[in-house]
Amino acid sequence: METLEQVLTPEEQFQARIDADVRIEPKDWMPEAYRKTLIRQISQHAHSELVGMLPEGNWITRAPSLKRKSILLAKVQDEAGHGLYLYSAAETLGTTRDQMLADLHSGKAKYSSIFNYPTLSWADMGCVGWLVDGAAILNQVPLCRTSYGPYARAMVRVCKEESFHQRQGFEIMQTLCEGAPEQKAMAQEALNRWWWPTLMMFGPKDADSPNTEQSMKWRIKRFTNDELRQKFVDMMVPQAEFLGLTVPDEKVKWNEERQAYDFGEVNWDEFWAVVKGNGLCNQERLQARVSAHEEGAWVREAANAHAAKRAAREAVAA
Amino acid sequence: MNQSEWPLWEVFIRSKQGLDHKHVGSLHAADATMAVQNARDVYTRRLEGVSIWVVESKHIHASNPDDSEAFFDPAADKVYRHPTFYEVPDSIKHM
Image (cartoon, rainbow over all chains, first blue to last red):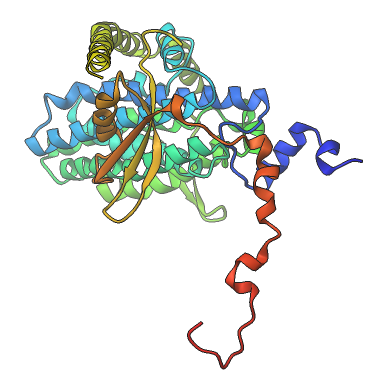
């Protein structure tokens, strides 16, 4: 007696569920490679949120007004929250928080290269929100429908919160662009520095992205890197024009036939150099992260000691 | 488990009075008091809740996905448990 399940291998059954858009949940059977890919991707995503607090944290004490400071604090707090949602999602796959942090701190795990660029002026806070979070949203919205349930649910929450991040960034840019000539120049200068690194956030070209095909098949990813990069350019060029700013790419030109903007080639040598640890701030970011973790060790230990003491006291009372 | 790692807690939030608590995610905390405080910071920054429950994850017992057929399928062939199974004449109102 043979049922359908005996005919199909576990991998085939798994793929059939994915193809039917059935979400995979933590206790369901999954191929080891799927589990590993997700742990890598989700933890990398979580690390990016954590490290992403650093370039903006740099400006909290120097925000130009109390309103801007409150907004920036709330945004940085959101990023800590996003990291926590994502670490929790990764933990459902069988890894531990300690393991993930150890991999981040040893340099084994990666985080988004964008955070290895410095934030030199207040206009950078505008660009980080408008461009960097804008790019992040494009990446993240399709992840709300990713095949792994806990990841998709975490992303729904992240996306809800992320749109305020982008809007406040655009507002900073708009305010600068409507201000004094020096302020507008500051906005343009920041755009010049952030434009290309932001395009790199979508990852290598499809031809150089060996994992994309499998991730698409498993419906972890729903669009390729190049598709998202094109969408981003199409979205951002008109916004830059609205601000009266110029995107630093002479090849940007509307293509009537494609109904999309043509644009120049990303400097892939720079991309790979930053990925490999040779960006402007790689060492500084990792060092700041490791110090925060090490200097916070006593807090974690004290909380454990306090919990143990309280538990003992309650045991005596009972 | 690493000794320095705080235990894992599942977080449930009531979004407003009259609705039930719903699972929203998990977090690490040294004890229940801290878990509630952390849940407030992590999951209710935008008025998402009026009440929080936390349960240490190790206390959750779940059905096994491998048994789901045997477990849940018996309900599939009992259409008579649904009102749509019954035909009501058009002239009958309020049913």
